[in-house]
Image (cartoon, rainbow, N blue to C red; front, side):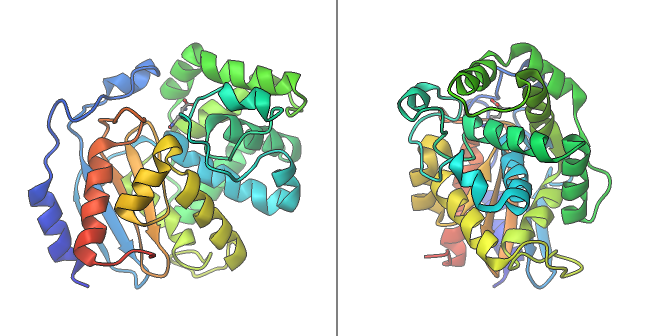
Length: 304
Ligand SMILES: NC(=O)CC[C@H](N)C(=O)O
């Protein structure tokens, strides 16, 4: 597959333009980002890589971090985790409160906010310093120690995160939260604030394209069954109420964040990260979705 030729086509075909979507503003710090940023990085299982645009610039990974925390929690807690969070698509926005009452405080999946807050609570119960452990895990996956929290973004979300406060308190009242709600939210806002480049993200996500092995050292980090399960949840829940649309258009498991990043993996082929901060109405990168659709169209390959 001549990925370079394909990326050349993508670069010509797609140019970010004002009005394609809106940069997230409910976290005020994110609204400062230049809407016209655009980059892509594709890392192949054979070690080759291809990129263009702002692929080396850091951005707020936001909900993409939910995949990292789920991976750690799954390793530490195994099946017990699934007593507290389900694996069904929600069909509702990422910050929705509506199903929680009907479903007795058990979030639909770990990739909506409620689900990731439960995962954060579970990690707080078993780790002494979850923030540090999370950073170490992500740094190890990328083979790069230069990965940090963006404190300004975390603080900005903490100040304005009323819906997440509502979610954690509501779940606490329904018996599905153990730790202090302020501590859980602090961890959750920090995990979302991690700043990474497309290159770092695509290398980290090689875990899910490389049978659970580190992209560089080939060390086994998680087993194949975990890869299957996490990729399945990305496929069905990675884009909230647009998960079906992403699956239909792109045909790969993936995860988005309101920072405008999307990572998708083609198991045993490649991992690809794209960044364009202009979001569509469902909170997913508008241009990012289009570019990934064209990528799998041009390669003629998807997991299906
Ligand atoms: N979809 C997202 O990226 C949402 C993450 C954001 N930190 C929030 O909780 O609202």
